[in-house]
Length: 120
Image 1 (cartoon, helix red, strand yellow):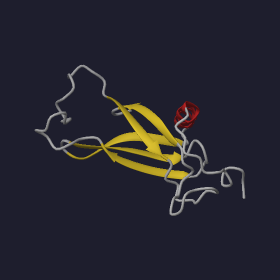
Image 2 (cartoon, one colour):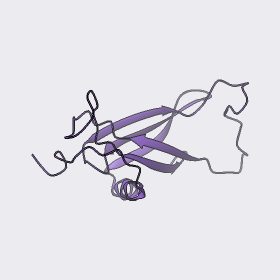
Image 3 (cartoon, rainbow, N blue to C red):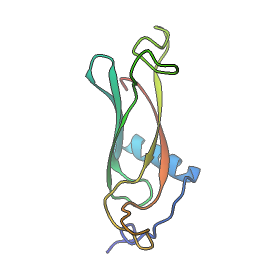
């Protein structure tokens, strides 16, 4: 068993893991993009290596909401000359039971932030 797979479960949002996620993005070991499965519907997809435990993660999150509600985000909500930057909080969902994890919990416990430009 390598050091990463033996990593103790720890519920953490320490910024060091967001920094490490950025390094993994730059190196191509973690990827992030916005998917548009149909017009007006957007979702983030983050996949690759967890910055804390190194196991594979595959995270999908909806970014668009039902239109017509207060605070909803539709496809026309940003000015046409702005670059759409998405911020997504990802929790390790590697599927591995780490030592010290609560019952029925997988992942190493880390949550980290990814920021990326739409279309990048």
